[in-house]
Length: 135
Image (cartoon, rainbow, N blue to C red; front, side):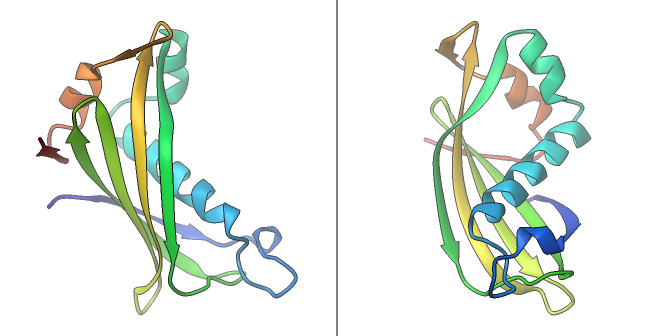
């Protein structure tokens, strides 16, 4: 299965009093990775919103495995599936250099066009090399 990945460095302000990344920041990392993936495929969120095409998170599930700390560098990967009207992004964060699994996420995204739930054919074309289709 083909995936997209990017490397990110933890910033100290993302950590809590114990020196580990606050749990909410993993959602930011996952979102930043999806946006980088979209841009790599030729889509910018700003351009979509100007056309009233809004990809919105419908559901997010995260499993935490191992903590990230300030200045850690990690890989953030995204695998893309399509099921009905939903895109399902299976994401993972792996601390380098060992690629220790730190978090796994399943993020469901739907597309609103002019305020209505719609089939995201634009995304189907742009993501065609990365999509795994589910029934």
